[in-house]
Length: 177
Image (cartoon, rainbow, N blue to C red; front, side, top):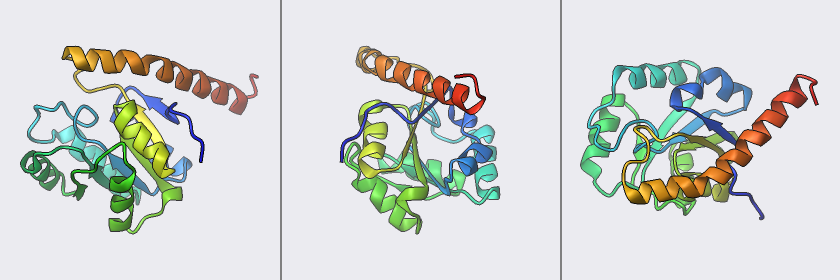
């Protein structure tokens, strides 16, 4: 099945992916990367804003699970325990297998699942390969290392294409085309 590397939606941060928007999109299960998507990689524990966000999702009937490539299970385990959410570790993104495993564990369906992440070549590519909605955020804390700066520079054209697509869809929805 052909697909584009352009994310379906682009947001400044996870908080912009509101329960109301997810419901409008038909999403009943939100999968999310952890590092640079929900918190900086060095962050050991979730803050209250993230806890409140997860509670709002759950209150709206939207399931939530972290899908991480992180090889150190300790930090992810502690972080998710503090949030009270499950996670699918060693997901192997961009392979879609971690996403499929998370959907099965949550008793969800591909048609009603979205994957939230900050990296095109892992999170978004895995989402596209799995056939779920690919939601992308700017990295928490920004690109720090030289390698991260290169990766984010490579993502720029795809993000720009997503912004154009989103603008066109807004104009169409509001009759401004």
